[in-house]
View 1 (cartoon, rainbow, N blue to C red):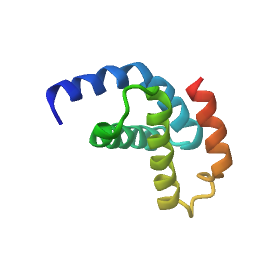
View 2 (view 1 turned 30 degrees about the vertical axis):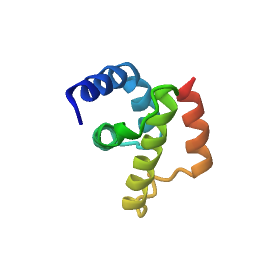
View 3 (view 1 turned 135 degrees about the vertical axis):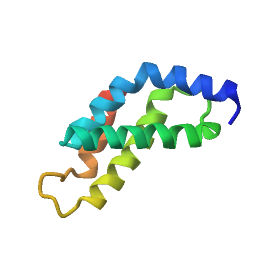
Length: 99
């Protein structure tokens, strides 16, 4: 990744990070776990940033990555009764965070 790409990602991420954290923390109850998932979203986002189309809005793209990271987290913690969210709820929450 070039410095220009990393800089652009950082600018976009800093604007939407509170929305993404709201989305993550609505489904991942433990604060520390939600922060870990958020970090995973940032890492995945920067790794995949070359796939981002700058002509399209950034928020739906990064929320899609967040949804994947949340699902990974929930699968890994599936035995915990406090960590259950169905996929339809994730879609609804994503729409709210995108707005």
